[in-house]
Length: 145
Length: 66
Image (cartoon, rainbow over all chains, first blue to last red; front, side, top):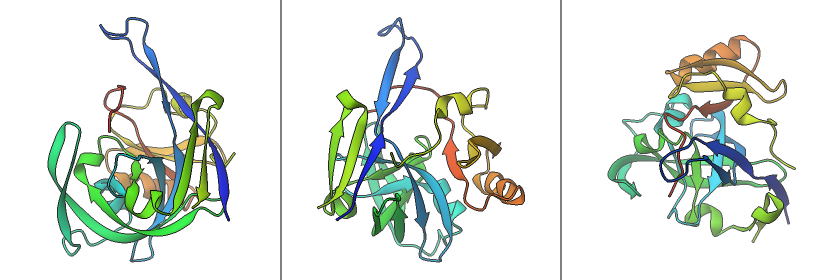
């Protein structure tokens, strides 16, 4: 049974009309090593997202992994403000450290480049791990389900 | 605590929006950055860091709704 504790990141957001003093975004971010089916690895930021159907990463990370984009199976994904994003799929290994490591069929989408981080979603992540968000303590925990 | 890199916003201060940044977690410093993620990663490798943390500087800092 693996359990790991991660700190929240508190990121300042600039002022706008709705938030004249600016605001703070509290995000449950972690750092992961991801390894493609070709054995190539890179490290990136990931975030558990219970609203995501599956695990999804920026297309740039697929390029960094030197995966064969043209040869991978494709489908469409969408989210808030975007839809019908062409997404390439590959089975990758994700290692967050502290015994939290798993293999998952993940999408890579150009639409995720804007965010620059990977989303750990329901299939492949939340079906294997229990996540507790403790923002009042500025930590979240990930535990084998 | 599992995550390293103490202050990510501070580390990314002054780096242009929209670029990919290669960060040494052990040294807590930026090694390279650029629009091309592979080029930034390669430059970090040349500086001895095989697996830098690759982070994209947001085009705009805004609230996210996923």
